[in-house]
Length: 322
Image (tube, rainbow, N blue to C red):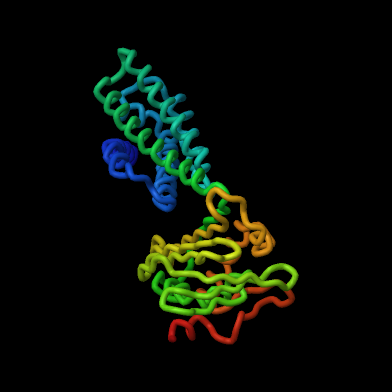
């Protein structure tokens, strides 16, 4: 009972803050803000759904209705489905809009309950206010993701994340030296530092070809975030960013990466296919797994021609010592 009560109180707090949140973000959310909010709503859906399925009578009492146990459980299953859908998609925009539709169903359910003389009207009205606030938040997040998708027309965008059993400080220091990137990014042949914030990148292309461009460091927040982009004149316009967060339970660091290739509003450059030669999402996911291996063991496990091996003669200890 206490657990469900705390959960419903959290719904209320979210609802009360939703209007303020929406107004404060009127200037628009960036991709990571939208994604972070979407993940939060996904976990919230799962938590609320589990409470509704496991303890429907407690939820009934909290929202002031009676005799709707079956309906509450059905709404809980829907919440769980939405949560899993949001968390399981790289682009959960459709699932966010589905959540908005679910919010409308919840409001209709509570509104109809007000007509019953068995309803605790004060609790039901409070629940309507909370759900209405969450609806504002869901709509804001869905709109943010939709606008981001429109602005990225013509851009291939890839996002993924992974827990690495090293401190985020270690992970940041290794990644911050861009010359380390070819150790785990297979499509890169080399990255050479050419200035305080600039570097020269060489990528492998199928058939033995190479694609080269100059890049610039855009943002560098120690132990938190690194972002970069290619300079004008690159055959394939590209950019990337990596976020470093502490993993829960002291399990190391959560590494969240994003890469984009191409120019907004244009067709993808022909060189893009030459650069990747494979599915970009799979490529980045494999690169991040190799980063995890390098950070945790000092080597990349290889299956092409040999069971294992280091990409070069030094380990992460050597790099961190430099």
